Image (cartoon, rainbow, N blue to C red):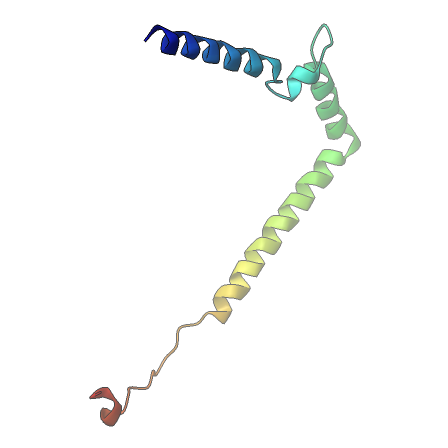
Length: 94
């Protein structure tokens, strides 16, 4: 019983040690004193003022519209069948 508990404790501590060495997120790559949030804020500010954000919004709206048009074209092609023929009486008795 004691060896199983010892092995479990060693295994758990090994897993914790290995998981602590892995980066938690992309922010873990930032090693600056004040963090990288200021870079993201400056990029957002720049995108708003140089027109990149507006272009991205227009491109996204065009993609949404194209997706909706594609869906409408697909529903137009998938019209239900009307006037299905019944099997002749000679075949239905089999």
